[in-house]
Image (cartoon, rainbow, N blue to C red; front, side, top):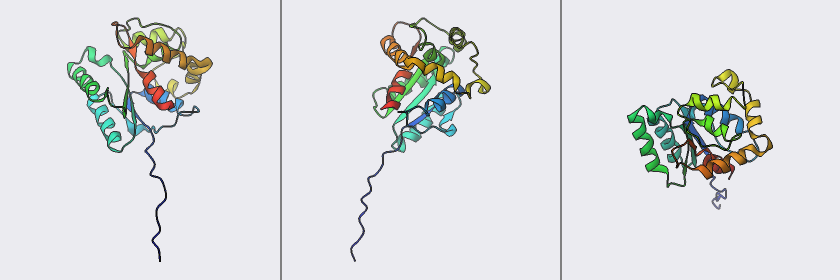
Length: 193
C-alpha cells in the first residue's frame, strides 16, 4: 500500500501584534474588525509598559516565525535612562529587520490619532499634551477602558479616509526635526498588506 503524501501547504503564521498600553490594545482590537486587517491580537500579547517586557513579546512572536508589529509609546525615554537605552537597543535590533515593524510614537499613540485631524508635528512633550490636543476633535476621549472599549471613537477616526491622511502625514514628518513623531503608519501599512 502506498504511503499517503501530505499535500497541504505549510501556512505562514498570522501577523502578530504585540505592545503595551490599554489605548493601543483597544484601538487595535477595533481596527482588527476592519476589512483588510488580518492579524492576531490577544491580551497576552500586550504587557506592561516595560521595554524589557515588550522585547520579550517581540522575541516570542519572532521565534514562532510570525511577522510582528509592535505598538508602544516612547515618552518614557525622557525621564528613564534605562528604558531609553532599551528603546535604542530595540531600534538597533529591529529597524532593519523586515519581520518586525516598530510602530512607536513620541510622546504617545494619541499623537497618531491627532494626525487624523491635524497636519502637525509640533512638540508634544507628554501623553497628556497629546490627549489635550486630541480632545479638540474627540472631546470625550479618555485613556480609560470605559471609553476605549467602545468602537465609535475608532469609527470616527477612520471615517472619510482620515487614516490614509494620517499615514501620509506621519510618513512625511518622519522622526526628524525634534517634534512629535509616530511610526504607527508603518504598522498600519504592514497590517494592511
